[in-house]
Image (cartoon, helix red, strand yellow):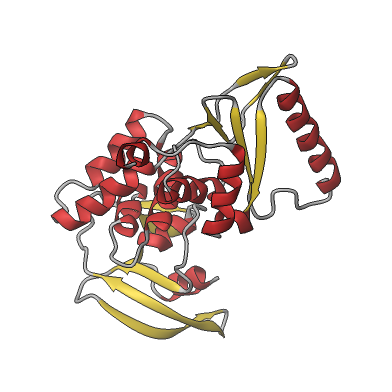
Length: 262
């Protein structure tokens, strides 16, 4: 609604950064009501009322970005003009206010949307060409942990948490033939260790009970096949001590850098 009201008053604007990503339906952490847009002039932050249909919707913060002309034009997303997906992702990832978890979450979503393969990665890397050295370092650090195979924000944040806690990183969404059916656990380590991450709202909806039963049967089938399975909820992933306990009880080994240090 905020974007709609702003667009009605200023149809010439181009949404940038996190705003461009959110209008594409991609997850972005901790950006609240900040709306970034391309516009001629000095970068500045303003407070305005968004007005739609004659009614003020809410207060919001607009960040105007001096990034004109657009390097690669603007995409049309519904009624809105947005900077390219890769440019928006790189803008957010390299921002000084963006933490590693938020950066990896953005890259996971953008990489998937651009194509879950080398072409998608290459598009993101091209968008980072020419940035200052510090920004490139931020981008590379997040890109090293990014994966287009993440199917939820919880999986993206879990992978970063594993790295920060010093655990070996797993393979993601590996296809396994179990009792005649293909299954793809969220994370798989050598030694037949599996972690399933239940993000917020995974079982929400009218079929919640049925979904939980199906997930339980899937886990039992994996265990019958010799896999050791653990589960982590959103509350575990965002709590370092709880998540460390989940991984340690599963038997996930330390990362190579940890073994070398020891």
